[in-house]
Amino acid sequence: MPAPAVELLDVDKSFGADAPALSSVSLTVRSGETVVLLGSSGSGKTTTLKTMNGLVTPDSGKVFVRGTEIREWDVIELRRRTGYVIQEVGLLPHLSVEDNVGMVPKLLGVEADERRARTRELLELVSLPPDGYVHKRPSELSGGERQRVGVARALAADPPLLLMDEPFGALDPINRRRLQDEFGALRERLGKTIVFVTHDVSEALKLADRIGVMRGGRLLQLDAPGVILEEPVDDFVRELVRLETWS
Amino acid sequence: MDLLRFLTERSDEIVAKTWEHLQLVGLSTAIAVGIGVPLAIVLTRNERLASPVIGFANVVQTVPSLALFGFLIPIPFIGGIGMKSAVIALVLYALLPILRNTFTGIRSVDPAVVEAGRGMGMTDLQQLRLIEIPLALPTILAGVRIATVVTVGLATIASAIGAGGLGDFIFRGISMVDHRLILAGAVPAALLAILFDALIGRVERKLDIRE
Image (cartoon, rainbow over all chains, first blue to last red; front, side, top):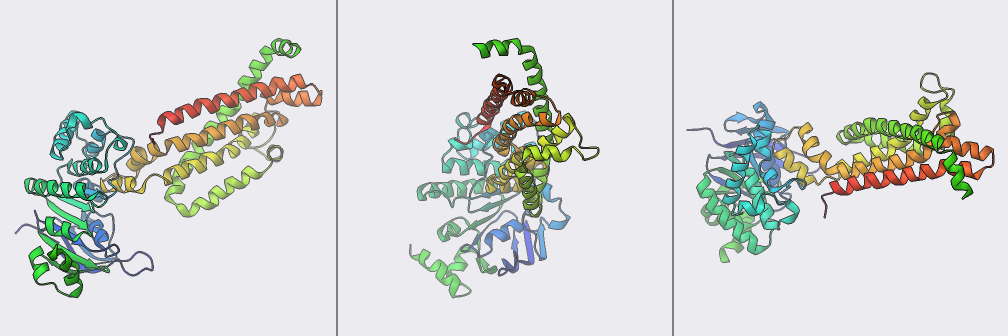
């Protein structure tokens, strides 16, 4: 059996004197699946995600990416080989869409011609006609377009693992629905391992192969959506998903 | 008309003194940028040092300039009379706006952009070169602009310790109670200040990507 895409073993993390952000979180993300970490703000879902590309270093416990402990990875290299999408997108405002999408390949030393071709291909993939968009600045894009560019950028180096932190959280409901649908279809085609963070239960149910419910820095349950709905481990999980089953 | 003739008669000297003045300003500002920008970058990485260092630069700014020039005269090696101690004092004054603006400029880069850069696998230097400096550049330049304009004015006082420049006219005019001489120094100095302000301001606006 191949090594899991990501594995966390007993990970603890606190920031300063506050209540711990993560307490003994253990989870395994299988290669090719989409795991959605679901929880309200402060539940530790983002912190969990950030341990996977070394943006957060655990106080104790271990993080493995593709079978290698994160401390053994060259963390810069790991990040270049891991797609990362955040809610605020974080496009570089002084660069064109093309240069934004091509940034990671550039950091990896890919030639300009190849970068340009790859950028066009990726913009097509996220349904932005390249001719209309390559030369635009982020400030000229709508929220939905920005997020699409953010996804294209994350995919630029063809990373096996994609980390997405509330990528559609700042969008209006219509755009959010649309991007979720498109992303669902895109995911099938790409066959990547995805760890996706959200506080939106319906988004989790829609996109996840497995959902990890988090609360207060703990992972309460990690199961397929059906199992979460049918056999919640406790009242909190039951309450969390109950309303959704009625809608 | 009398004034105009007076100035034309001394045009050679005015040009020479303006050139001296430009050298004082250019050298001081360049050194201040050379020290201030890297120092500010270091401070953004070690924030605990920021407030004492910027505080010190603030205090220097409150020392009356004539007094600072005077203080430097008896100090061996760096002090004395002439251009060298004048440049040292001018650098000290120019440092604060450059330091403060560079520090603030880099610190106010959108954290989401910095986070995205880190997530993409940029090294600290790449983050600085590809994200932080380009985005902070308008603010940094505003600091350079303020420093330059202030230095143009302050450099006239440097004449008091024998550094030359347009201040020579002004001090001579004061001691001879000749307002035409004062103007021969003050007008070119003011024009220089306006010129630098406009030129650097233009570059600033060109680089500003905010709409």
